[in-house]
Length: 575
Image 1 (cartoon, rainbow, N blue to C red):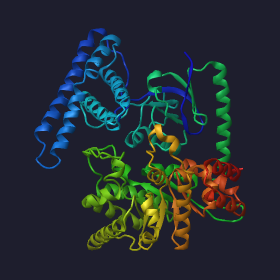
Image 2: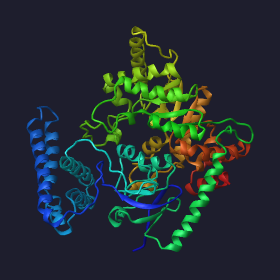
Image 3: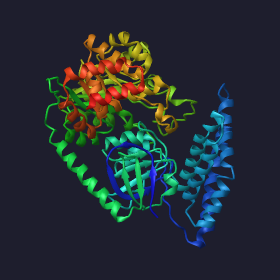
Image 4: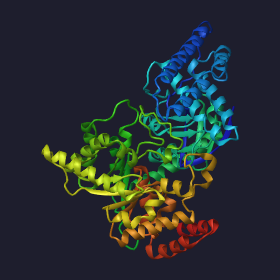
């Protein structure tokens, strides 16, 4: 049966291929049928996993230490036990196995959907958010069934034309899926700035989010057309529609080939204004794409991805090799390594995080300063790598000048330890700060006296300024890069940095979005950092831009106070 689904297109392009369904968690569950004579055994396997997890929770209850957090932690465990014993989860899964002959993992993951839907219908905001506890409990049971705490994803059957259909994806999931070369990503949840969307754009593949029920409506191996530009999915299309989209797909490929001719062309506006285009990366393996894009540096090495999807910490030597590889391959081009931005949605495997609001809790530089031993290891690794290239250190999520002072002192301690061991490093290594919190933007003059350069993280700057969760599709329409407050902050930061003669770049999603290229140029930005796949598209915009024409229009945009007026001026700017 053919039908159409509509979501939010977050990465342009057309993909055609087979659906590969992934589980709604960090564990990927493949749907398969069990023989009728093994149904009882499958139910027993599920019951055994529930028993294992129940014993784990009961053991944890007995080991909770006395102290102010005892009551809260005990309540947390009791809630998880209640979820574990909920008939909606266990007994309904038994029925599903018995009636449909599906495997236990699949039955449990589907019943999780049902229970989560019940929580989402609750009016009380606190209770509604307990759906995250449901996911955590189910993940624990699934891991017990699989017999391990780690996870390696199952490769899709259709290599080369598989389309990932997921309920949701975490940053750790995304790192797993990058290696399988999917031609498109589709998720029930998410927004234009969710991690699924960001990584899809980094891979230059179509992506649609906020589909809500796609994961339940589609079947494994369904044939799909994904139109990332329009946000449309056609499931099992007829021949005429398929032929039409294949023609469109071919035309888009021709346009990409034309852009490839710009790889070795310098990014300079029509009036001669030079612009640096840097790349954002997560792992050293991304350097192949960086070189293919013609980027003139690495503007953001997200070092926290070295820490994900593992039960141990990367050693100093392991980190050093990763950083040195990137520094060496970029030769004397700048490589900006952001110290790990862990916490919030990028947690370590063994982190017992129960914060009410992780996005506002112990994350990024706050976590680094709270874990000085782990931070010292990373700083030594970065400093050692600085001997092999033009390496810079970037501090994430700063909000207080004291955080800069503490970090600089810890860098000094790391330097002293390397000197004692006669290990070479760049004595003049630059230290910069990410401006992604309104407090940092408003304290710019104080921060600039302590930093060598600035990098604007527009994703979090917008999220924290507008108080909008950027991965929640229910408020995605409120996440607005063109909000007057955001435009004023960007103008304030860029102009302030230029007055102080401090280099400033934008490394958030706005930098790689061609709709905002001329806007940022008009604000005075001359350093952009984005995913490698976005470099040539942005360069094309720069080569066609004329600063004397852009600047007056951008001034009007910054002064405008109505959304419709701003959008009309932006359209005029881009035409």
